[in-house]
Length: 106
Image (cartoon, rainbow, N blue to C red):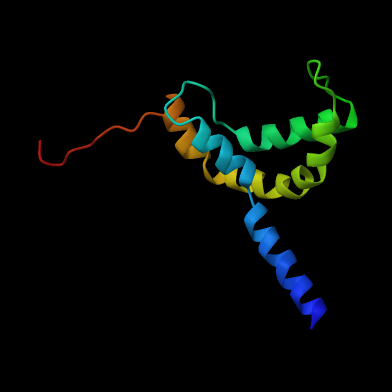
């Protein structure tokens, strides 16, 4: 019984963690000129690089990144998938692709 509960908790946590960096970055940057293109994936990679010492941060150290690195590693494939699905929307929002209204009643 206890192992079933542990598995259920792990499944629920995995569902909650899925692409949270992508969703967080896209909702945080609504209406701004900041690029959203693969922003969740970039955030996960930055956390992982900071935790491993490949990327230097300001004066705040790496403790925060070391505690978030396992979550970022789990989230990375889901964020990559979500960012890829949101790529057309991001390209339109950045003005890279324009959608033209083609009215058939001209």
